[in-house]
Image (tube, rainbow, N blue to C red; front, side, top):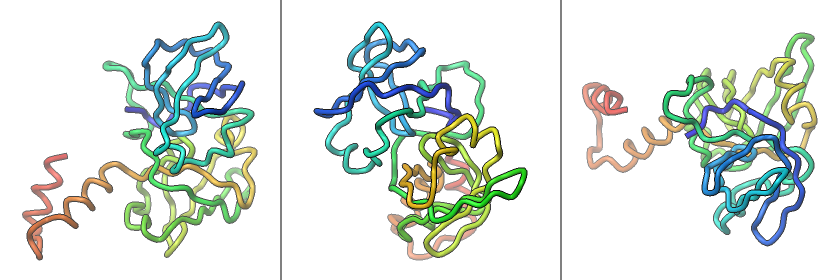
Length: 204
């Protein structure tokens, strides 16, 4: 599990044959889970200046692989007892979105991301979302897009400062929204009462 707070900007040394080698200050252990641009991956090799992770064929079909070059976001998996910030992030990418606009409002930036309408029900206004591993709050949701407000420090300290119209991003929707939709769409009941909804909510 992760929190969506970027701990370091690592540098890609190489990417090929399903393996991604990074130069980083973070010193993981073999087998550790680490999020790279929001994708949970396992460490398969340790080097003197960094480490290597492996991407399965399934992962390669769900992430924006063109961004596995230059700088990437990394976040080690959360440890028991760590301070909890951001929101609950699994590192499981749901889909890839495309930035349709970025506007500077002086003390913040408005970013609109287009997404397959199939995933819109999993993105509630004022809810949490993870973009390339960054925990963010959704301000507005439309039929096939949503709007974020990005503060200057996020633009400076993450890859968001390099993004432009047309940039593809990894998106992980809120885990609770995913669970709730699965429960509601697979429930044997045709109609759920408010008591049913309250009971399901209490389970999580």
